[in-house]
Length: 131
Image 1 (tube, rainbow, N blue to C red):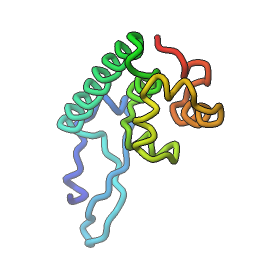
Image 2 (cartoon, rainbow, N blue to C red; image 1 turned 30 degrees about the vertical axis):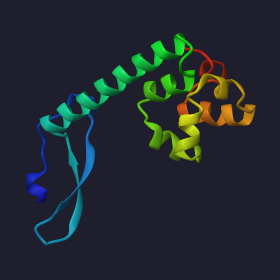
Image 3 (spheres, one colour; image 1 turned 180 degrees about the horizontal axis):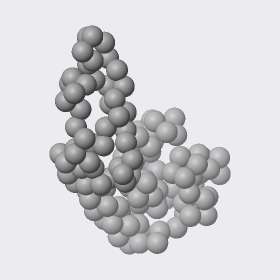
């Protein structure tokens, strides 16, 4: 994208702030250009957030029914997926998914629970509960 073509339509998700976008300047070099975003980006972001909210609600219902651990709910509530939580905690994805099972989650070591709580930005106490 050329520097002059960087969208400035505005994106409500940015809350009036700008973000940096790389664009090609007239001299052929890449430059960082401030952008207010564009409508298409806002629509896609809103759809992704709504999907994560639906997943969080479904995980909450499963956790309250004892079919899933609170970890899955908190992951979606923090707008994460298995891949991102895996990267953030340094755990393999299959281990994160395994910890979604209530019996496995209940037996997690304190240090591992602390890792999850830190990655999700919640307290250790909140990690074990579902709202």
